[in-house]
Amino acid sequence: MFGTKIKLDKELMDKIIKYSKLAGYSSPQEFVVHALEKEISRLEEADGEDEIKKRLKGLGYIS
Image (tube, rainbow, N blue to C red; front, side, top):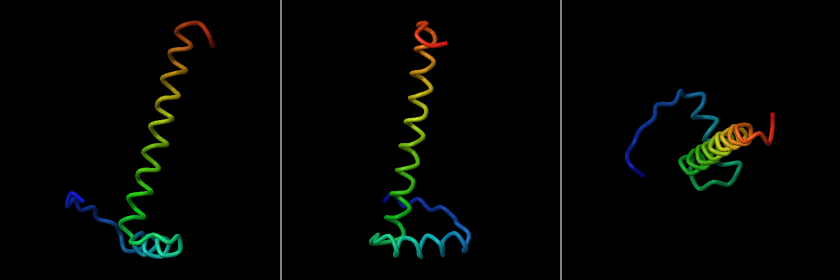
């Protein structure tokens, strides 16, 4: 990775370790990267949907 560090409280880190093992990830880091990528993708899609709705509204296709 890039060497970037993020501080997490112990309780959250314990959950990350627990659920990364349960889900079959090779490491807690892999689990966190996947979770963040998934959330960012979801947010990008939502942002895209809002932009599409705004454009369609501007064109008069929806009100």
